[in-house]
Length: 321
Ligand SMILES: [Zn+2]
Image (cartoon, rainbow, N blue to C red):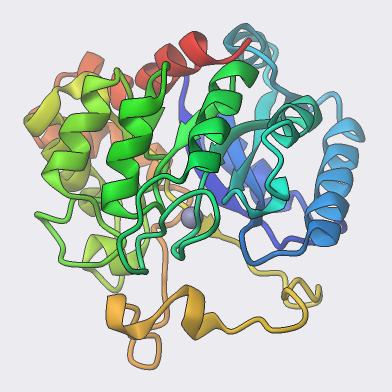
């Protein structure tokens, strides 16, 4: 069975080392979605990052494959390679042009958010005043559907995520989001959002981030508990994993320039008490013990395999082209 890591972050720098991505492969992962930009990043940085990451993948064809289809993911796994796709967190790098979605798709973007924590001209963010999908946003949803890209609502505002899921003609995912019923945090998602996602045929992939799991030193047990909550609420076929591990490489300057203010994008009022607890992540080797941790919640081995990748393979098979 394929193990699918729905979201991971390298420094947004063209020279970022892919060594952490190799560690996912060593931990038994077959597909990783790698972030190539957020709403706060200028287009110049997003483009440089895509170019650098594409070159890093192409430089090691014996190890990495940029996946177009789920068949590519299966073939890569059979050949002992790691399949990779890129994800974009927010619509601001589209420059208000829905046609840009197809451009990003052609460059390897397989998964896309419409907003990152804050409102923009397309969608509402989860750490802002409630805003529905705008008229431009409806056109972006259509463009994402038409381009065969996974629609991701993880950082989207609650009301807007419901608008997106109602508007999408394809299953919608949360690539890294945790149940609000388990941990009160502004980034976590309500039972209504989880139910609506499942109704699209989509998957809620739980993250391995300390703030969202409610544990300053999270482990596979925490991830399994959150995935089991989703499975109990809407069915095991709608739970997945996106640990959202962010790999720092301090020698690289990957901070966005100009007016970048971390407290704007991650407000302490939402639950990011960084002064008290810097964010930490479940370790990569979570992947090696998660199958057992999921079974310890009461799942069968077959159900655990669905959570660890079978469900995202199903949805990507429906969405990608
Ligand atoms: Zn994210």
